[in-house]
Length: 112
Length: 112
Image (cartoon, rainbow over the protein chains, first blue to last red):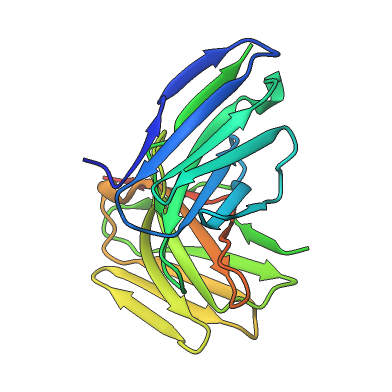
């Protein structure tokens, strides 16, 4: 089983719909992140959480919200999806301190 | 704001040669720098981490250098193989926050 699991893997939704992307991890890490990736661009940080009670906005948080339900679960919501939110979304975790990030397999989201 | 630059043009090399990828950054003083590999449609996978006080790091056929004066890291793959074909991302972090800032990546094509 993957250390970081994202669901769904693929999703097509209509403009204006609410959608939730879920992420769970078995690494036991405190820190979790949501990124989006557009073709030709790097990973852009949407939100990050250092523990269950600590949630922070990243570079591109507008139009998104998150929920840290438990140490192992971090969900990303699009309250009212729009076409320019079509992208590949990644969840990642890391241990506290200066260590590497572990990524999920990604969720390909298409907003039509 | 911080800026991380990687060559957007793909690097095409012949099998057996050494591939060298560049990561430049500005407006930033990272505590360490990381390199990741990303295959199409998949999440990045961690390869190497180098700290600001280290000049060079090696792992099997991989070598990373970190020049904080030039604000540059070089990533080398020696004796490259077609299986090394992927996009390689550099990521930076800092002492005060454990957010990862990623470059847009360089695509490496190793031809047999």
